[in-house]
Image 1 (cartoon, helix red, strand yellow):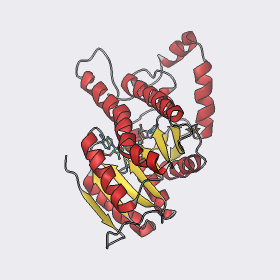
Image 2 (image 1 turned 180 degrees about the vertical axis):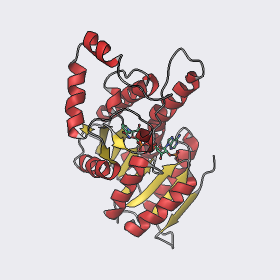
Image 3 (image 1 turned 90 degrees about the vertical axis):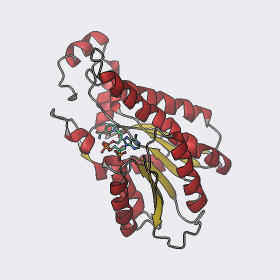
Image 4 (image 1 turned 120 degrees about the vertical axis):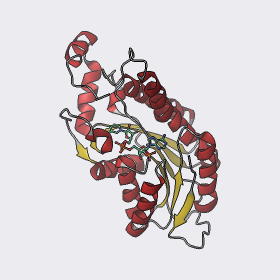
Length: 273
Ligand SMILES: NC(=O)c1ccc[n+]([C@@H]2O[C@H](COP(=O)([O-])OP(=O)(O)OC[C@H]3O[C@@H](n4cnc5c(N)ncnc54)[C@H](OP(=O)(O)O)[C@@H]3O)[C@@H](O)[C@H]2O)c1
């Protein structure tokens, strides 16, 4: 995987520490991550944009600078690659300063069935990206943020982590793990000056959900989602479901006894494999 490091909007390449809000976003090439990048660009943040597809990142780089980001550094890498993430983090910190916000948003969703051997590699991929990718992302920036005694780590989990979703066992369990991982980290960092925000999106209109053939309740657009996420991040909300009405539905679902949950959800439409 190529690893490119470029920036625009600050041609001299001078460090610009402490002048702007610094925001790093993984999974920035598409969907929610792209919408978050545009949202923070409009508020004048310096951006670090991470994903694998460099062509999409380079296009976004120009867009966010046009929207008001003083700098946008792009790092084409795979969040499973710890070394590439560390190199990117060191570069970002050296040139833009320690991040105020790191959003571990990169994620994949696959329909999976345990009995199908080919799906085992999909399980591995989903766990590695959705869980270890989040750990790798936070690890790369955490030391500098602890030294600065400042910053917010944001984990993008999912309401799919509330209960086991049939047909999405890998995704659902990876997001449950992400929720608990972020909670552990939040408590570990209590009193350090750092915050951990866990966001569980409901259904957001992005390429990830475009393949769903079933009706998605409380579906919202990615731009709307990004604005709501940013408000939760600004408020350092420890845990939230967005949109709020999906939050109520998800909490009710948690209270439903297994016999009823199993009966209803065994008939639900499933993510295509
Ligand atoms: N959309 C929803 O309804 C919804 C609901 C709940 C939770 N979420 C979560 O929200 C996050 C964003 O999803 P989305 O809907 O915006 O999906 P999306 O449009 O498919 O975007 C996923 C992003 O993750 C990046 N990514 C995937 N694997 C990666 C890897 N190994 N290394 C680096 N980047 C990687 C992709 O970029 P590259 O392919 O270029 O690497 C892309 O930018 C995910 O964590 C997802 O699980 C979404």
